[in-house]
Image (tube, rainbow, N blue to C red; front, side, top):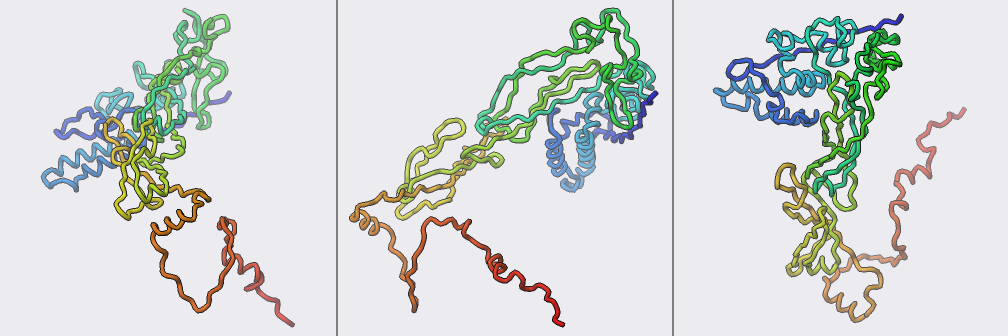
Amino acid sequence: MSRTLVEAIPVETPRLIPAVNGSMEEIDLYKVLGVSKTASKAEVKKAYHKAALTSHPDKVAHEDRSDAEIKFKAISQAYEILYDDDKRHLYDQHGMSAFEKGAGGMGGEVDLDDILQQMFGMGVGGVPSGFGGGRGAGPRKPRKGKDQEQRYEVTLEELYKGKTTKFASTKNVICSLCKGSGGKDKAKPKQCASCGGNGPGLVTQEQVVCSACKGAGNAFKDKDRCKKCKGNRTNEERKVLELYIPRGAKEGERIVLEGEADQVPDQEPGDIVFTLVETEHHNFNRSGSDLKADMHITLAEALCGFNRVVIKHLDGRGIRINHPQPRGRILRPDEVLKVAGEGMPLKKSDTKGDLYLIVKIKFPSDGWLKDDIMIQKLQELLPKPEEPIHAETVDEVEYEENVDIDSQWVDADEGDNEDGEDEGQPQCAQQ
């Protein structure tokens, strides 16, 4: 008979930092860092760096240093817990009492049974929750199920304007007939013969879910199984969900639909988490809250100025530029015009970044001017050529047009090696 091996996992217990007044008050760690409860690890880390920088004891007056040290320790503790997935889950379930020794929360201190129950759904000795054998008394709070992570592609237009979309989700839900037991009313399950009642457990330090009982540790006879779920404890259900992407959202941000993942008996449902992936735009590029785009103008407009709509924005608006050229002023290729307040919107704000328009000049096509008189007049209008270059010897050469220099260019060192491949190689000595 195989034996389930359970290895105790050491858990570092963070210190409970007292409030400024010295009392051991319950601290909202999310408020300490100024982040939401759905904040990603990257957002937690960013908030910690910002808060630690502004609250460091060295940054305040000497008389305020004592309070600053307490606040700084609270910020460090908040980061230590919220950045660690396991500690954060314990905090979300039990608050600071999960880390406070002798303060009454969760029976006074965190025991191994509690940690294993939170992480693997079992008690000490590999006994599943609800079958006794653990050190803790009383009902356990259900652990949270797995999150479902998905990538979600969005266009730059959708990130600019915001988007709300509905989609159908098929997920497992607790059977409404048997309430997740898997059996008929008043039927009693028997210990699973395949796993010996262990359900989920650590076998050679790897978590394995019994395929026979689906991790429940017990099973019903065929005649006693629920008619609706056939003993599976869950049924598939199709549900219409709504996904909201706020204006100004960025690539990599996570949109969380809380509790919408698959349901599992004796567990709190996990979340559906969408990670935003920005698709490439044909003209606009984003850098933080700013945008840049090419602005195409004619040679005449570069020389004489213009007043027209030069680009269509991400929300469909036309952007008009009135650019009268002073006498002799020229717009050159790749010059940049800055349009303040026409960049990406900032979330939860009416403020926008800036739009940078890069000048691209469209030169006339070959053959656009055929009248010799007009050519002469154009030469008279344009600046005169520079003084001729004087040389003792002048050669008139032939040339090719429209040559692809990248395909024709040969590295000088490469060319040298072709003529002297053996140069520098050791030579055989003559006898």
